[in-house]
Image 1 (spheres, rainbow, N blue to C red):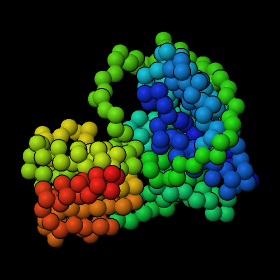
Image 2 (cartoon, rainbow, N blue to C red):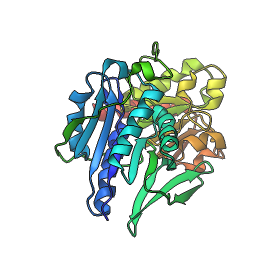
Image 3 (cartoon, rainbow, N blue to C red):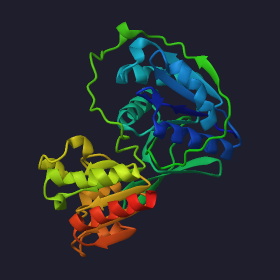
Image 4 (cartoon, one colour):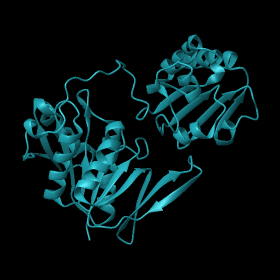
Length: 327
């Protein structure tokens, strides 16, 4: 039996979050594996949302439901939940995918609770076995994976960014209005203003390349070495908890159990010993490169490539070599 798939596509700074597009691509694969069901995207955003919506066809959507308006431009958990729940009730999908971004992690459990259905959180793998969706997610700091089979007519699944391949096929999507049964006056919470750090780099949770520094950096002034390396390879700079606790970097840069969970294609761990709390946030990275002068550092146990040496010598040399290769 073909499965109907619904995917919430999140807009930030005038474009769709990469994690949402990955979820949409995966949704198309799941629908195809169950007999070719419909893939519908739901978009909630400002007045430009409808203009952006048509582009979702190339990532797998056959239809796009759009709720737009100036009062929906800023993220509001109450408004987003109501809109997505409304779409889910109208579409009755077997699967509802939501990217596990910072806001997505807030939205998914709200939607699941409102629909009174099962929730699979922070999923990194999805397959179809005997017509049933089988999900996987890491536990115990990535040391093992659990397999989930959710019950119920609708399953809400939050997908960890960078876990699935982003694919395009140039398809077209029909854009339709999602008529809301509520207005700004009905919301329990109103967004007065949004203050966000200005950065041209992707957020850590969606970055495909990350260069993180730990206590071995010896001070905030030395992070310039990592900033330079990151600039050369198009990466975002992260940090360990020890660095953040010391005030060297802001909490928004923290990778780990009490920070952000990331799954980039490339992760540099520079001067990071590899405490279990840090591994919990980055162990699902596709390729891990560790640079540390302590050859017994735990980080080397999870690293694909390891350099035992003084980071203050290794990082500049590595950066220089990359510059030479790039010409």
